[in-house]
Length: 222
Image (cartoon, rainbow, N blue to C red):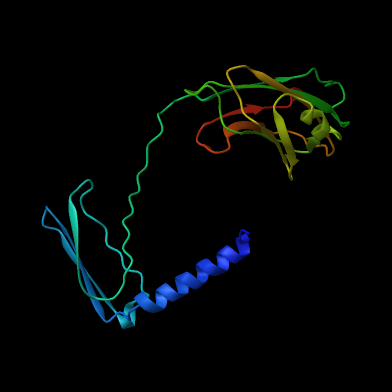
């Protein structure tokens, strides 16, 4: 008859507790000396008074050859951390992005209007396809997506989720490949605003946000 996972966990915890009572000794004083072949040296001193205080020192030369010498009695935890950044290639294009505006009735600018947007986008980076992608559409002042836009977009290729905030429509895509995808929806004017400023459309990789493309669109009647 096999033990349950809960029983296994209890046995493991009991074993760890027994080991701790056997192996643990109070720290009296420990000195850790870090040395390099290029005459760098630093000593960490650990006593009962500062045993819970985090101590760190920047290593001056990376790469380099370092040694660690410990003396004294007690237990300490030593960790080395290496951080580095890779600069993105300048002007590396990763997404293609364009927008077409449907025909708009501009005869009566004093009455609310509707505009149809057709967003064309694809991945043109070095990989075969992107990770999950977000198409971020800022609204023109006074405009918002027409009712039913979320359901309409969810029927279009690769759309995983649709969110709408105060002035932004976010379309989540499973991925984008080299094949151009088109996402069409309509925005309606709820508040009359004159001298409308352009708004932006941005597409970016959810996990690599530096991979992106941004364009602007305007009210064709302005």
